[in-house]
Length: 129
Image 1 (cartoon, helix red, strand yellow):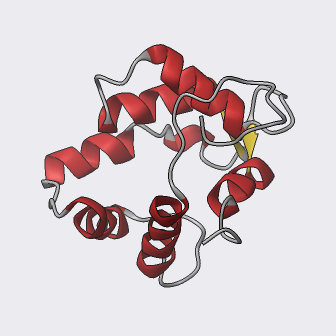
Image 2 (tube, helix red, strand yellow):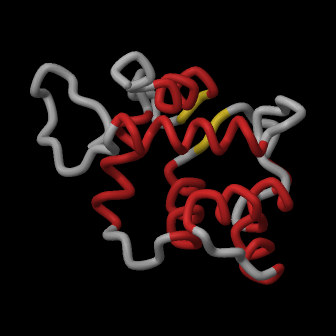
């Protein structure tokens, strides 16, 4: 899991502070205009920076289209959004891990990952490195 809450949940996986720091740095570097999101081209650059692999146009389109454009302004992510995104980038990741990640990021347990929840997740561990 990403976060611990006084032993309330069993920890199965946690990004190291250096891994988390790198992800945040790559996101910020690719989001040059401080939009708060990555465009298709920004996403491709981020994948190259993180994994050394340049996704094809089809791969990038596939990941980007997994986000429903009709719901992109609603202000939160649902478990379904998480499942679609993870299936695109990590198709063999067990469903229970996706659910654990979602529950961990959903800090107020309202069934939605708000910007506040997401911001907390992206800033987690910043003071440890």
